[in-house]
Length: 108
Image (cartoon, rainbow, N blue to C red):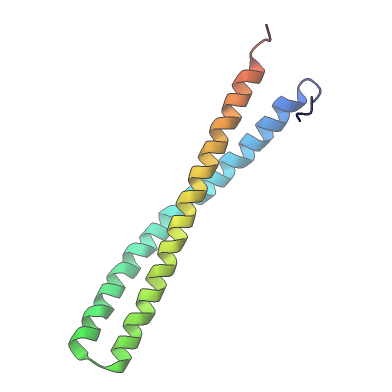
């Protein structure tokens, strides 16, 4: 069931949601950029730790390798979460833009 809002309220509400959505997208995209940089560094560190664990064959090197792999997996999950959330917000933004476009046209 759809509620009929007074004229102009729907447009203001859509504009407000669009503004909030755009700001959130900007923040998430910056977070994604920084997280990707961290991922690259951590990926290199994990590869180095793996090589050291293979070469040294010590328990401590293996523990460092496991810890590095754990951090790498965690940051990969965070990257995936950010990518999914950005895609969701982009879809919401498209809907809001379509809504504003529809509200801006005179009704026939």
